[in-house]
Image (tube, rainbow, N blue to C red; front, side, top):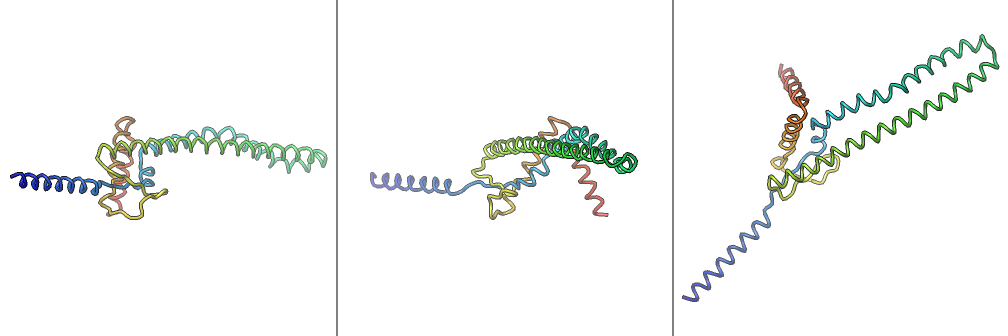
Length: 198
Protein backbone atom coordinates (compact mmCIF):
# COMPACT_ATOMS: atom_id res chain seq x y z
CA UNK A 1 0.00 0.00 0.00
CA UNK A 2 2.80 2.39 0.89
CA UNK A 3 4.50 1.59 -2.44
CA UNK A 4 1.29 2.36 -4.33
CA UNK A 5 0.89 5.71 -2.56
CA UNK A 6 4.55 6.53 -3.17
CA UNK A 7 4.24 5.70 -6.88
CA UNK A 8 1.00 7.70 -7.11
CA UNK A 9 2.68 10.67 -5.37
CA UNK A 10 5.67 10.55 -7.73
CA UNK A 11 3.34 10.31 -10.75
CA UNK A 12 1.32 13.35 -9.56
CA UNK A 13 4.54 15.28 -8.96
CA UNK A 14 5.81 14.43 -12.45
CA UNK A 15 2.51 15.43 -14.06
CA UNK A 16 2.42 18.74 -12.18
CA UNK A 17 6.04 19.41 -13.19
CA UNK A 18 5.14 18.70 -16.82
CA UNK A 19 2.21 21.15 -16.59
CA UNK A 20 4.44 23.82 -15.06
CA UNK A 21 7.00 23.29 -17.81
CA UNK A 22 4.23 23.48 -20.43
CA UNK A 23 3.05 26.77 -18.91
CA UNK A 24 6.56 28.16 -18.96
CA UNK A 25 7.03 27.22 -22.62
CA UNK A 26 3.72 28.50 -23.96
CA UNK A 27 3.58 32.26 -24.28
CA UNK A 28 0.83 34.52 -25.46
CA UNK A 29 2.54 36.84 -27.91
CA UNK A 30 1.45 39.47 -30.38
CA UNK A 31 2.93 42.31 -32.36
CA UNK A 32 1.93 45.84 -33.28
CA UNK A 33 2.88 47.72 -36.43
CA UNK A 34 4.05 50.86 -34.66
CA UNK A 35 4.31 52.94 -37.84
CA UNK A 36 0.66 52.18 -38.67
CA UNK A 37 -0.37 52.79 -35.07
CA UNK A 38 1.07 56.30 -35.09
CA UNK A 39 -0.10 57.04 -38.62
CA UNK A 40 -3.71 56.02 -37.97
CA UNK A 41 -4.05 57.10 -34.32
CA UNK A 42 -6.76 59.78 -34.21
CA UNK A 43 -5.02 61.73 -31.45
CA UNK A 44 -1.82 61.95 -33.48
CA UNK A 45 -3.78 63.18 -36.52
CA UNK A 46 -5.66 65.66 -34.35
CA UNK A 47 -2.47 67.00 -32.74
CA UNK A 48 -0.79 67.16 -36.16
CA UNK A 49 -3.65 69.27 -37.57
CA UNK A 50 -3.59 71.59 -34.54
CA UNK A 51 0.17 71.95 -34.88
CA UNK A 52 -0.07 72.80 -38.59
CA UNK A 53 -2.47 75.63 -37.73
CA UNK A 54 -0.18 76.79 -34.91
CA UNK A 55 2.86 76.68 -37.23
CA UNK A 56 1.07 78.87 -39.76
CA UNK A 57 0.16 81.33 -37.00
CA UNK A 58 3.75 81.36 -35.76
CA UNK A 59 5.01 82.03 -39.29
CA UNK A 60 2.64 84.88 -40.19
CA UNK A 61 4.73 87.75 -38.74
CA UNK A 62 7.84 86.49 -40.52
CA UNK A 63 5.89 85.97 -43.75
CA UNK A 64 4.71 89.60 -43.59
CA UNK A 65 8.33 90.76 -43.11
CA UNK A 66 9.47 88.61 -46.06
CA UNK A 67 6.74 90.01 -48.32
CA UNK A 68 7.67 93.58 -47.35
CA UNK A 69 11.31 92.79 -48.03
CA UNK A 70 10.52 91.31 -51.47
CA UNK A 71 8.47 94.38 -52.35
CA UNK A 72 11.26 96.72 -51.26
CA UNK A 73 13.88 94.64 -53.09
CA UNK A 74 11.90 94.72 -56.34
CA UNK A 75 11.56 98.53 -56.05
CA UNK A 76 15.29 98.81 -55.38
CA UNK A 77 16.24 98.18 -59.02
CA UNK A 78 13.86 100.83 -60.34
CA UNK A 79 14.96 103.40 -57.75
CA UNK A 80 18.68 102.64 -58.22
CA UNK A 81 18.60 104.05 -61.76
CA UNK A 82 16.72 107.16 -60.63
CA UNK A 83 18.55 107.92 -57.34
CA UNK A 84 22.10 107.15 -58.41
CA UNK A 85 25.04 104.95 -57.54
CA UNK A 86 25.71 106.18 -53.97
CA UNK A 87 22.08 105.58 -52.92
CA UNK A 88 22.11 102.14 -54.62
CA UNK A 89 25.24 101.06 -52.71
CA UNK A 90 23.87 102.23 -49.35
CA UNK A 91 20.40 100.75 -49.93
CA UNK A 92 21.90 97.50 -51.31
CA UNK A 93 23.95 97.07 -48.12
CA UNK A 94 20.83 97.69 -46.00
CA UNK A 95 18.82 95.15 -48.00
CA UNK A 96 21.58 92.58 -47.73
CA UNK A 97 21.74 93.03 -43.95
CA UNK A 98 17.94 92.71 -43.64
CA UNK A 99 18.00 89.61 -45.82
CA UNK A 100 20.54 87.99 -43.50
CA UNK A 101 18.48 88.94 -40.44
CA UNK A 102 15.30 87.52 -42.01
CA UNK A 103 17.16 84.32 -42.85
CA UNK A 104 18.29 84.01 -39.22
CA UNK A 105 14.72 84.62 -37.99
CA UNK A 106 13.45 81.97 -40.41
CA UNK A 107 16.03 79.45 -39.17
CA UNK A 108 15.11 80.19 -35.53
CA UNK A 109 11.40 79.75 -36.30
CA UNK A 110 12.02 76.44 -38.07
CA UNK A 111 14.06 75.20 -35.09
CA UNK A 112 11.30 76.25 -32.68
CA UNK A 113 8.67 74.48 -34.79
CA UNK A 114 10.84 71.34 -34.97
CA UNK A 115 11.38 71.32 -31.18
CA UNK A 116 7.66 71.70 -30.48
CA UNK A 117 6.77 69.05 -33.07
CA UNK A 118 9.30 66.62 -31.58
CA UNK A 119 7.94 67.31 -28.11
CA UNK A 120 4.37 66.49 -29.19
CA UNK A 121 5.49 63.33 -31.01
CA UNK A 122 7.60 62.18 -28.04
CA UNK A 123 4.68 62.74 -25.69
CA UNK A 124 2.33 60.68 -27.88
CA UNK A 125 4.91 57.89 -28.32
CA UNK A 126 5.38 57.71 -24.53
CA UNK A 127 1.61 57.61 -24.07
CA UNK A 128 1.37 54.78 -26.63
CA UNK A 129 4.13 52.79 -24.90
CA UNK A 130 2.34 53.11 -21.57
CA UNK A 131 -0.95 52.20 -23.21
CA UNK A 132 0.50 49.11 -24.92
CA UNK A 133 2.10 48.00 -21.66
CA UNK A 134 -1.25 48.29 -19.84
CA UNK A 135 -3.06 46.65 -22.77
CA UNK A 136 -0.62 43.73 -22.77
CA UNK A 137 -1.06 43.18 -19.04
CA UNK A 138 -4.85 43.44 -19.23
CA UNK A 139 -5.09 41.02 -22.17
CA UNK A 140 -2.64 38.53 -20.61
CA UNK A 141 0.18 38.77 -23.16
CA UNK A 142 3.64 37.60 -22.21
CA UNK A 143 5.22 39.61 -25.04
CA UNK A 144 4.04 42.32 -27.39
CA UNK A 145 6.55 43.14 -30.08
CA UNK A 146 6.77 46.24 -32.24
CA UNK A 147 7.31 46.36 -35.97
CA UNK A 148 7.62 49.42 -38.16
CA UNK A 149 10.36 52.07 -38.04
CA UNK A 150 12.15 50.44 -35.09
CA UNK A 151 11.37 46.82 -35.88
CA UNK A 152 12.02 44.31 -33.15
CA UNK A 153 10.38 41.35 -34.91
CA UNK A 154 11.93 39.59 -37.89
CA UNK A 155 9.01 37.25 -38.43
CA UNK A 156 5.50 36.94 -37.09
CA UNK A 157 2.38 35.15 -38.21
CA UNK A 158 -0.43 37.51 -39.13
CA UNK A 159 -2.64 35.95 -36.45
CA UNK A 160 -0.44 37.59 -33.81
CA UNK A 161 -0.90 41.10 -35.22
CA UNK A 162 -3.03 43.07 -32.74
CA UNK A 163 -2.39 46.49 -34.31
CA UNK A 164 -5.98 46.96 -35.49
CA UNK A 165 -7.43 45.90 -32.12
CA UNK A 166 -5.21 48.30 -30.20
CA UNK A 167 -5.73 51.08 -32.75
CA UNK A 168 -9.52 50.70 -32.63
CA UNK A 169 -9.52 50.78 -28.84
CA UNK A 170 -7.19 53.81 -28.76
CA UNK A 171 -9.28 55.71 -31.30
CA UNK A 172 -12.55 54.78 -29.60
CA UNK A 173 -11.22 56.07 -26.28
CA UNK A 174 -9.86 59.24 -27.89
CA UNK A 175 -13.13 59.93 -29.70
CA UNK A 176 -15.12 59.27 -26.53
CA UNK A 177 -13.02 61.87 -24.69
CA UNK A 178 -12.60 64.46 -27.46
CA UNK A 179 -15.37 64.25 -30.04
CA UNK A 180 -15.82 62.77 -33.50
CA UNK A 181 -12.48 63.34 -35.29
CA UNK A 182 -11.79 59.67 -35.98
CA UNK A 183 -15.41 58.95 -36.91
CA UNK A 184 -15.25 61.49 -39.73
CA UNK A 185 -12.04 59.90 -41.01
CA UNK A 186 -13.62 56.43 -40.95
CA UNK A 187 -16.60 57.78 -42.91
CA UNK A 188 -14.23 59.25 -45.52
CA UNK A 189 -12.38 55.92 -45.78
CA UNK A 190 -15.63 54.00 -46.23
CA UNK A 191 -16.74 56.48 -48.93
CA UNK A 192 -13.36 56.04 -50.68
CA UNK A 193 -13.82 52.26 -50.60
CA UNK A 194 -17.32 52.60 -52.06
CA UNK A 195 -15.98 54.73 -54.91
CA UNK A 196 -13.17 52.23 -55.57
CA UNK A 197 -15.77 49.47 -55.97
CA UNK A 198 -17.59 51.53 -58.63
